[in-house]
Image (cartoon, rainbow over all chains, first blue to last red; front, side, top):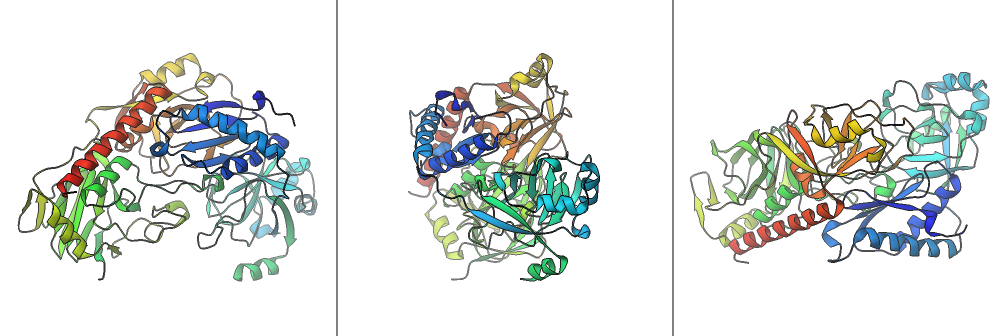
Length: 236
Length: 336
């Protein structure tokens, strides 16, 4: 992984943030690299940067406009910071990424789109579940709602588009797929992805430290649980 | 000493507890929230002697009716409201000392859309993830994670605090119902009655829109639609078209990002904005004008005035200096 100036292009996002773009297409290696870069920048604890947000192929640094030092051009300073951190991020020994087992109940009552997905990809429902409930998934990005992960690594045979009409209410814990990703809904919200199961885990809980179950870069393994186990774990 | 107790007699349209926002967790999808008009929020706090980060009540278009059971020092900034204290007009943009048992009614906004009611000592709710701001979609922060309802009881600073602070103020006057000052601060985010000019920079996908759309964005008048909320303002106006229909990778968004989805609509992201999004960004509203934009009520008209990033940053710097100057002026009135 050679580091060159061309690793990213930098764009201002208004007057209080910059965006570094590493690629315009989803590339899992690029995504992994920018997750590491985000952590390296975070470790520097720059007082005038209040949010570091890695996404699928880009990374944003949000400034605290009140604390940018006088005379500092934050866009230039951010670019320098990213370049310096990029070297450090790649030199540093790679720690093992955190990993999480996510129990999923694929019961049709909790998986309103599972049968339709199976039909669309011409596999049995059981085979769709078998190909989804495996290791090898990874959190590519957090976004849309607090604690909501966008998880990559979906089996290529399970790639389906979003639903033509979004559902108004998707229950909390719903496991949904679209394109090449899996999302887990932290709250009951509207959503256009195909719901193929539900986890009893609390995806986001402000009473818990940390509140978010998922973090960017985390390795994820989906594990099949039956309805009785789902109900039991919901009561925990 | 027990805190000031505030009873909610009528909640208003959408009254929530807000502060300067919840930062540092956007990488986990945690939206920043905070006051839509941070300028009015800061001034209201300064007027009652609070730190800028103390929690205030954000009133939206129609404010609440509140019963202050104890002596309280309050200030209402932002939009101009038909507001009364015990039946008399409430003087806005200045500190007001309420006697125990006073009813304060923040009626309809006559100009602007959002008011900030600060109470000496701050609205006392637990901080969640480092902020007292309400985030209604996920039901956390503020008062029980939701907008106020009739019958709610809020706590704020102690009654003694109100009296002590008001006692330090110069140039005060009192009527039967309340005490106030002969001076007021300027309502710097109150929008003009006709078309509001909002400075904006070309967004990073501006060049992907066709020439007509690029022109129309800065030339035409936009109307804030009724489907606008704390998450985003939908604008009605010319339909915008991109030259290519390609999907974008979801990427980080900002307060003030102007998204233009494929259906031709335009959405300005506001305080409760999602942290990431996949729609093209045609523009970014200047940070200095976000507070002004938040004061445009549904149906109100605006125009985008092109500016550079450098100009936007300078404007923001000047706004911060202006607020700091006004805050120092208020501190002098407190004998500070």
